[in-house]
Amino acid sequence: MRTVTLRRVVITGMGAITPIGNDVNTFWNNLKAGKSGAGPITKFDTTEFKTKFACELKGLDIEAFIEKKEARKMDTFTQYAMVVAQEAIQNCGVDLEKIDRSKFGVIWASGNGGMQTFEDQIVEFTQANFVPKFSPFFIPRLISDIAAGQIAIKYGLMGINYCTVSACASSNSALVDAFNYIRLGKANMIIAGGSEGPITRAGIAGFNALKALSTRNDDALHASRPFDKDRDGFVMGEGAGAVILEDYDHAIARGATIYGEMVGGAMSCDAYHLTATHPEGVGAQLGMKEALADAGLSLTDVDYINAHATSTPLGDISELKAIKTLFGDHASKLNISATKSMTGHLLGAAGAIEAIACIKAVQEDIVPPTINTTELGEDIPAGLNLTLGEAQKRTINVALSNTFGFGGHNAIAAFAKFQG
Image (tube, rainbow, N blue to C red; front, side, top):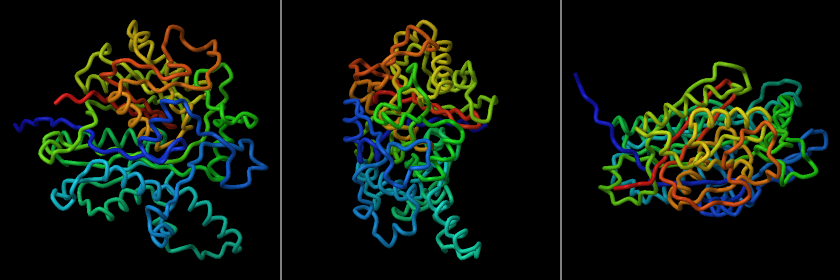
């Protein structure tokens, strides 16, 4: 019977474009500073919309990264993917001519794919009296897997290549899959992450119809307020995050800088409701428990949890119940924070940028804060350190990143300090 020796998986590159920064360092510095990325929507006229604000990207010049002719062939979610992949590749310092690119893969996530493309083309279709004269790039721009393909084409990466779709757990699902492929020896390097361009008329109106979005139009800057008594829904965000996972021996052999280690991951399902989380967080508990078991860690090893915490009345409490139930006495000794209070909710890309937040937190021993929470809701479990208002210094050896999605999908990633 064949035995399999699991490889160590390290982080050697990162890239991010977010509502609070268009590169990893700016994003991280603004997270530590507690900066909100929310403001009025500029992409379309919101006069008839219940929600008139979001966390948009700011000052991103796509043509500085992608030739104009090529950019026209891509939906915004793919453009964002290309930008962060470039930063991650540069950040990891790999010479693509000196490695086996058949062992370098891409696993990319998007919960919605080409939403702007779909909306634009359908509007044109109806305005043309339903005459089917669609762009030849309609389907290539629309499909969720195309970002993974575009990244691979640009860099000649011939390894594992596909897209994960599990709603707002999508990019953590990509990270967990990439982690498993590398430790099983199926790849040496994988760019894993996610991108999303959901600030469209259909995106905002659709989530408004679900009553999922905040309607705090008179105070957009403070609208994303996880755990607060007045939380009324999430704030839509856009952007992308990329993490390069690499086999430890491969990274050492090429002299790579190692930023941290991915030590475990797990996925579970609430099997409960179409859009709501389980009220007691049963699926979340299972996911966190399995991720730690996968990593060979105990509950008391965890120092920080980057919570999914979107600022919805039901979701925030169910996650905290899950943490308190699973971690018991240790729950009061770890730090929890909700960085969506600053970035908004990037849907399928949320896990990728929050993984980067965890990696940087472990690197620098700093917990980014939860902002905008002025008074905890009466339903919030007592005795938890939610890192309110300001970043906190503490030793962080292990961090968990929680992501949960419509359909009951849960994906949890565990990161640790790198020790050679």
